[in-house]
Length: 117
Image 1 (spheres, one colour):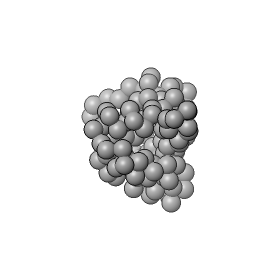
Image 2 (cartoon, helix red, strand yellow):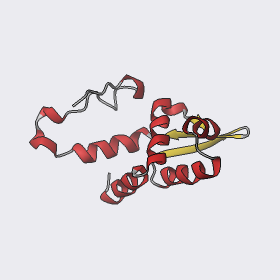
Image 3 (cartoon, rainbow, N blue to C red):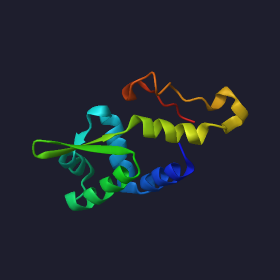
Image 4 (tube, rainbow, N blue to C red):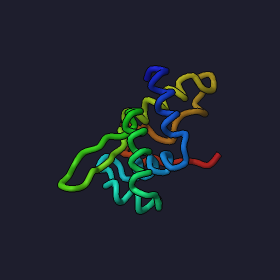
């Protein structure tokens, strides 16, 4: 991932509503969620949510597709993997203590376990 892409992704995630929406998309996996479901779960007005989802789209962190009358948003696994990889590429002097809890390429989104620090 190029530095400009990293900055765009981090900028898109650097807002409470966008981060919450993205978390829902990650939890939903590649199938994604309809915009209405995201708005309902977050308690955010649709017009406000649209603005925030557009920021995630612009940063390449999410995609959208139309299914009938609904717009379905989904996370882009390669974008998140690239962002995490960029951030951890040189951490801890190459020691395994910085290794992710799972291999995001080999594992599904739902199978990754997080550990408390």
